[in-house]
Every structure is written in C-alpha cells, then in structure tokens.
Length: 130
Image (cartoon, rainbow, N blue to C red; front, side, top):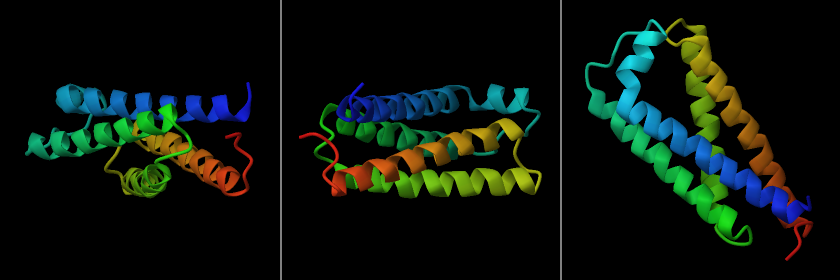
C-alpha cells in the first residue's frame, strides 16, 4: 500500500473510531457505565452533547480521508482534541474515577495523535504523493 492510500485509510479508520464511540455512548452510556461498575451521569444530556462533538470530529476525519490534500486544519484540531481526551481519560483513571477500559480508549486516541502528527510532517516534507 502506498503512503497516499495508507493515509486515506488512517483517516477513514479514525472516522469510524469516533463514530463508534459517539453512537455507543450517545445511546447507551448508562448501560456501558453500569457494565464498568461506574455511576450513571445525573445529566445524560452532557454525555450526549460530548458524543455529538466526538461524532462531528469523525465527519471531519472522513472528509480528510476523501481528500488528504485538503482539510489539514481538521487534522490539527483532531490532534488537540485527542490529546486532551487522552489526558482527561488517563487522569481520571489514575484518580480512580474511570475504568481501565476508558483509559485504554484514551491510549487509542494517543496513537491516532502520533499518526496524525506523522501525517502532517510527511505533508510538510512533500512525501505524500499529489
């Protein structure tokens, strides 16, 4: 697989990762949290608001997958959002508020951060075939 195809797949997988998390936690956060032995939220609308934003970022990654030569600011925004998500998830795991599985989701986001940064470096060096 050439680099151009690899990057298209990277952002498509990133889109599906966000869409999956967004849909799962939008509709089923209470049962998921119960399964993780965590208390449900008092205000489920807060979770739903967060998940529509996660889903929307997935739409952005999908746009990047369709044309990796455009929408690089979406990639930068994704780097910021996924870094912050990682920090929050891992922080709350270490202080005992979150289950390990949620922290591991943050680790997946951190892997995307690394790959997104690598993509932007390759673009800046002209290594992605136009």
